[in-house]
Length: 632
Image (cartoon, one colour):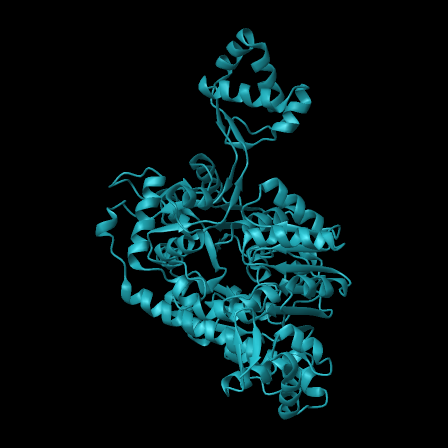
């Protein structure tokens, strides 16, 4: 058997492992259940991909990130490592083909989305798969105390019951001590080996910046970056608006969010990956699994709800080991939103029931309908049709998912597929009666050799180019062949899907675990309070604050975050700043926070806002709408 280092050099071209990778791989190869806590960019995927080449069976990878599994499978195939994936949106015939191939030993790795574990087809094939390793990516999803609990992950126990002696490798980039213990319990890890790499990123400089004019400050920050950047926004609309505003300021920026067409998302991602567009303005899903080391800045235009998300998203900067920055812009309205977010994240139970009832009506699912089915689901259209607030509705959908009723997948692109159903005699008959249809079939068979065996992805534009006709005419003929039952023609899908786990019930009899939701509400409140403390505490090193949140002892200061830099400069007494603020307010009696900062260039905005907060608490000054400070 080849040594892991030989495999690393042969397939990945690296001469050495990253920290803890070799130790994790050795534990897995020795058949031990293993929990790996590696920071974002720490090389988690290699810890299960490499062992798959050192045993004779299949590595089963459970991951909720469809875009990530698609990308990893493509990359593995380019490395001549056999791999496949099964996710939402795939047709039954395609799933059957992949599982059948897996049973025959065609793949080293099979990626599967967690909701697929419960399907009848997967459970039918499971006992005949030669599984030698079970890898659980994003393992924090199994814990209801984690920041992204997904009940589907609890079904991983089903796989363990079939393969009791097969090791499990659980991986995550962000887990508190409480979540870590829950992962071990929920996945039933036995005599588990736990590997923890420090969450410290020595090359990543954290800055929290108060900003009354985020657009101006974003432009300023991006103009001072030599390299590519990601700007994270909380809403799809904001990514579109901000990217246009950056363009108007001479910065080539592209938006990216799940509401865009697949082709446009792919085009924008490729331009950014190839450094032709230096700035991507995106919602938080962008960046998962994207292997780009030279990101020099991750800027949060909007404040994340918790430190787990902030740490993961910030960690997409500086993966090449060179210096990089993470900047978070905030103002008082952001803090107010965080303080109110727990109430908005947990809507009233009657509203949750209303969303359930509206969803089953929207999807036209009758009472008693069979479970384990996928339905196309477009949130914007759904909310418009039923007059629902999109943000609160999304939260209700998520809570119903956490109740185990359904799974709402991310937007996923499923390409156009064709499979020939007719036999040779029927095709010959088509050739005699329909010259144009015969020419289309002949062209497709020449381009795609597997059309007789399974649904095969086809490119309409390529077919049209070969036939020298318009794409619309190709589509018309494919529809005609489908009606004649000569082919099975599946049109592309590009959107989220709702996967039902249960028989549809009347919303009035829907059982909601209020005790569990109330517990989650308290956990959410703790997380948002931790995020607020991180933002507003200008006295504790940012790295120390974050690592202590994740339960890691960190006794020193990083020396390069904004807090450490401020501490390193000469200390200015609060009394001096208080007096300067009173002097500014003396003439007019009131000013915006921005005006006060501008009027006091000798002090940092962070020091000024800290003093203002204390002065407000002491009743020396007051604050009203628009962040206007007035003297009492």
